[in-house]
Length: 303
Figure 1 (spheres, rainbow, N blue to C red):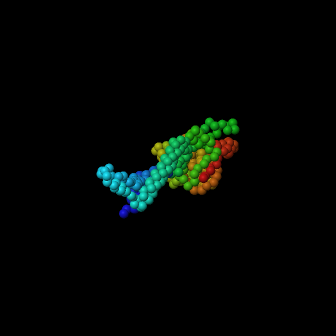
Figure 2 (cartoon, rainbow, N blue to C red):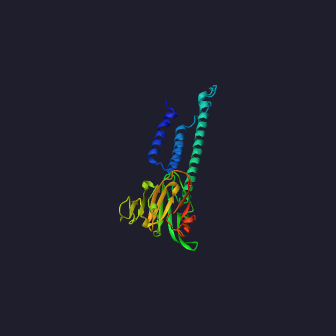
Figure 3 (cartoon, one colour):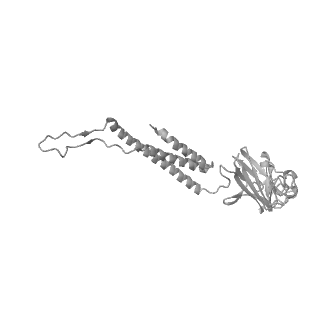
């Protein structure tokens, strides 16, 4: 005789194989897939164990209506269920009720989870970074016409869902691919050191320079394409840098261009980021914006 475990083995295997084939490994999809499989398994269990309706109990037949007059009535025949059947019927009914209750509870929990997850997903504000399963994206805009100490100064600002925000404190995830886009509206800064022209600690020690017609890639001559993977920005074209010396990260910024850098930070803590061109005030250009958090310097918090 086929046991319940034998009957459920094949459907359960089919459910898991189908789930593995249909759903991707993204976090959002896995959560929904698990909830769906749990609900489906509960329904399958209910269908398997609900069984047929219960057997009727004791039934007694009365005197035969055809008993002739004047004759002694024939003793009524009594149909009695076996003790095993009498005991089994209530037990089967109890098991059916328990199975129904379990399915109902599982269904309520799963549907509530789906509803709450869906509402949370729909009501969530767009992330300024990225999901757990994808890269973390951040965009910096280098703006001009910012007055600091009576002088016009450059400033790195962070693009957020609410507009431009301060770059004084920037939080980035550790052990995650970070995609940093820097848009510059400035011109080259005179006196920039050639030592900070090299791209370091990014993927391949390169950046994507959009319309980088005046940059060189891997030591080659100037390129005329709309985008190029470059490892060097000539010092004569260098406007700013995004440099984290403690991490060995240096992203040179060519004046008036857009750049995209891909990199990982595989440690946690707080680190100072700086612009290493003399774009501030004072005799050597190291004052003003270069010494003010949220302008051309700040802190990275890596978690």
